[in-house]
Amino acid sequence: MTRDDVPRIPLLINGEFVQSRSAEWRDVINPATQQRLARVPMATPDEVEAAIAAAREAFKTWRKTPIGARARIFLKYQQLIRDHLKSLAATLTAEQGKTLADAEGDVFRGLEVVEHAANIGLLQMGERAHNVASGVDTYTLLQPLGVCAGITPFNFPAMIPLWMFPMAIACGNTFVLKPSEQDPMVTMRLVELALEAGIPKGVLNVVHGGEDVVNALCDHTDIRAVSFVGSTRVGTLVHDRATKAGKRVQCMMGAKNHAVVLPDAHKEQTLNALVGAAFGAAGQRCMAVSVAVLVGAARDWLPELIEKARGLSVGAGDSATTDVGPLISCAARDRVERLIARGIEDGATLALDGRLPPLSGQLKEGNFVGPTVFSGVKPGMSIYEQEVFGPVLCVAEAATLDEAIAMINANPNGNGTALFTQSGAAARRFEDEIDVGQVGINVPIPVPVPLFSFTGSRASKLGDLGPYGKQVVLFYTQTKTVTARWFDDASAGGVNTTISLK
Image (cartoon, rainbow, N blue to C red; front, top):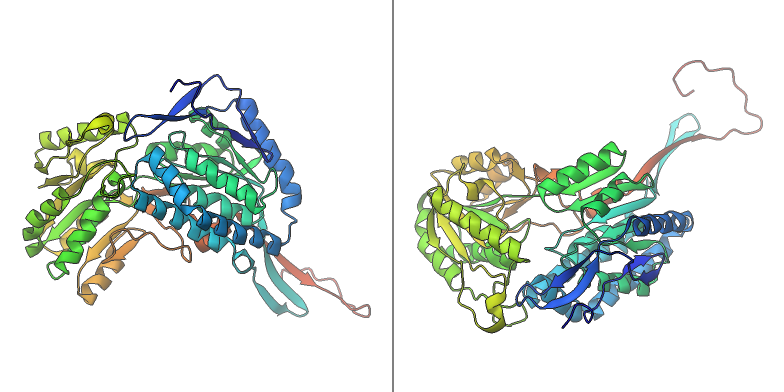
């Protein structure tokens, strides 16, 4: 198939899908086979400006749309996503590589946020205090900000866009989305369904691109808030640039998630959880378990952990027998392989080498690295200090729970952590003393459901409010506090020169 034959991903500007006039296009590649699936444009400055202008104009009327009307759109939208879940997952697997089952989970975890957006009538309620002073009432309004922007990563091309634009739009804002240029196809299909659900023209817009487009969104005076999920390097740049431009910013960034295993943990469940959380999605999750800390006698579980990892099947995500799919790109595979080599140089023991897994046919060209396990890993080693973002599990050891807690708290990242134990006392101490934003107790990937907010912390996050849940309603709205007093015609009083309400 020639480049002219593959589909061209459009932009969405003012309710219309339009082909970019850009001279710069990139290929969307199936990472399992290197098949070219589509071409995506790097939007021009004029196209970015047009998308923002459409959102600015649409905000004038959308902000006045009754809250019930907004909620009904998302009630319809969640049903459309349910109706198309299988096809959405198939598209996601083709362009991103994760297994079909995991792709369905990607879509479903985003769907949960859409369901929450349909409850905006309760979420966006203010507060009221009656008679705070004589005849005086005080109440708050949660009003939309204006045009908001979202910048999303390749690893969850359904879930993370659905973290962003549904809640922003449900709150009364308009939105400009910049999805990952590596796998934008499923995102665009979700956008099509959003329009079918009834989102008016200009309320949701989509531009594609790289650094130039990101910078334009950060700099533009009409954009009031920016939400970002991605690497620490890019997230830091986005946060610094957008905050200097006076915007609200939330950046969810890199991680090094530890799972602590106590000897009293349920052995089979714990080993299964570690292997699934370390190697699912080929380790390309910001909440993947990348370090297992075996405490005391749990260190004897290492051989069984390795054998479970060895038993996972590597292959294309659309195969029912695949456990671990490809990495997103050749560059990602090369980086992971370099870090594996560096781990050996640093003195860690390569207990299971997943490089060059045996594959046949087109899959030989894919970006595959199989499950890889290092033992004897210590702080200071490159594979411990860096986020590998691949199917590599580092196994460290600790003599006590306190030693494990100290190791985790010394790491700068704070996205997620987990403890495996059957001791309630140990679990309570762990959740109290650990300095990490999201904690799992016998749950390896503790990403909250949307009744709560995503609360990564420390070097894993910049900005003080998380995506989705109650926190994101505050992020996407301005709290306006009204203090009101009404007088009867017969009321009279003297001049009050004090700060007191009399």
